[in-house]
Image (cartoon, rainbow, N blue to C red; front, side):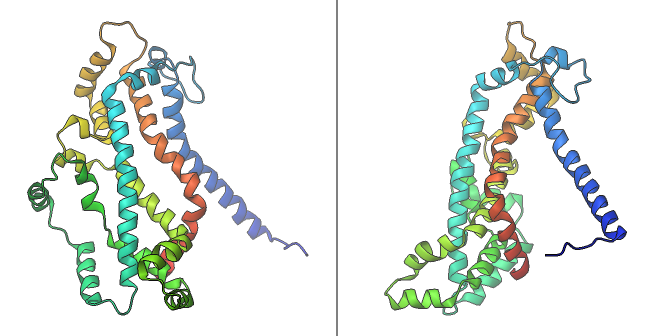
Length: 294
């Protein structure tokens, strides 16, 4: 096969694209790396600054201090539980709704779609939502993390676009063999839809992990607080000063408020960051199908 001969304009565009990509990678990755190297440095030494490329005095004391705090561990566990349960439940409910909405013989299908489209553009607002959740006894309840976010119409549109691409012969042959819709959905549709399942799982999971709104307004119990709320409190100067005194007590330590913040930040972003490489191979295909057909 003959190699394609590039003109000098092609080479210039390629070089510019590579340089631009490198700049974007550095601008995106370096803040995370900066947090990491400062969290791995001795806190007192880091206070003098000028740490840019590697820890000057390596220390794990910041992380040791973070994992000694019970309420941080509780927040981390609550965030993980909310993310896992909320993601599985939301993807399952949204996929089942999308499968039903792709059926031509579904009664009141146009009404369901119209109602769903309205929710994409209008919401009742915070105060009506608060009263509704109060009447449902969901305030200070773990289920407030799960139930209100079970269905998102935008995600439903992505599922519907993918399901419509599956060959109709699959459904027809399954019906002829006596399978019902529940069997077809779990045994045929879902196994063939892993790209869009992985993509939407990532969307929902990141939203659950980073959400600050729900625990701030609807949760006051300390045992149900998630990591973002605890992190915001730690980053707040006045509360951080109180917390750092509780952390350090009367013991002499080289951990500083700033180094503790860096370690807590890195602990909070690490789990969700590790998910991206696992779903990346599905993510591109899932987004491509959704962007074309939605």
